[in-house]
Length: 473
Image 1 (tube, rainbow, N blue to C red):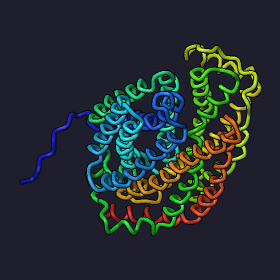
Image 2: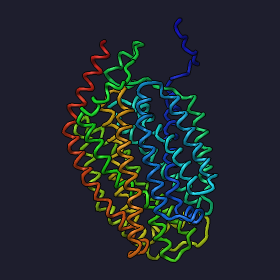
Image 3: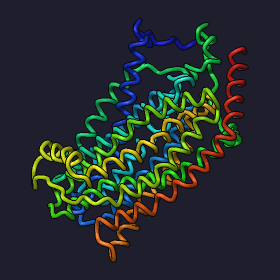
């Protein structure tokens, strides 16, 4: 007996419902990155609570990133072969539950165990989430749309760092509870969202969907070897290995600036808050991802090499700016010892206008982050451009796994290098030197994007021809 479809209200799937879905989904993507950013933003409070070193927290952060990346592969394959909505719901419940349990951890080892549970849940948002969002956007505006997707993750890192550095300056448990509660709320809201069919916005499938047809292709294991016969997938994955080593090191920027503040004679709690505020303000450069996502769309319409070449130029151009940013001192900093977040926020913003060292830090940070922001939306868009709809979650999961390996290595090794250097170079200079060393990994990233620019045109044309053929069938 055929299975009856569940009745839906008339508004289900209308434009307003789609907008609601995208908003809920973007907030979920922000929250999972906020959860990931919390632990490294509370190095000093966690060290006091559990009697551990910054290197230990670096290893924990690196392990969390790696586990999230490993599990994203399985989540991505599952999302390409079955319904994606339940996967995203339960993935969110898992990471939110892990955050809540982390807040109750009686020891560092229990904290580490629950953070591994958080990581398992975060893997679902990464790969399954990417597959879903790519189906809501067509190729013409894919870079711009993916810039908002990537920006939401950057905002999540910003929010997580702010929550951790401000609410967690004296008690690390408070921000973990806050992010867990938010995760539970939005997991429930996600149950009321619209699940777009695969390839929903592909031009080649538009007529088929308009006539009520369905795109029922799904991935299976026999197709896995085919994914990396697309040469662009290989180059996009390899660039992530090296790029994420450098990006992974940047997670320690809040601690670098916390140490810079403490070096000016301020206490640990004030240094944690002020350093966190500086790091948050610097991330305004990520807003340029909207511009670079749109620019990638424009260049891609002119040449199918456009997105990859733009990403290469942005990555390589950021390196010298990052080096200046790490080494700028915070001389003459004037903030109120022991003040609250609102007072300190006003003083930090004021210092950018009145203190030349703070102004130079701000300008170089914003410029460097702006240039690297070309990478994220155009990488997302290229993964969608060169892969069939039923392959995107899996390819993203594999790419995210390699990214996670690079990012966890960069995070852990930067902390280890800075701790080792600390024996002869005191803070904050040990962190500035450690971060500087790892920027060299951006150089092979630019080369990989150049190689991808040569293979992308053929792969994009092949995907378009396949979809056109299937729509006629």
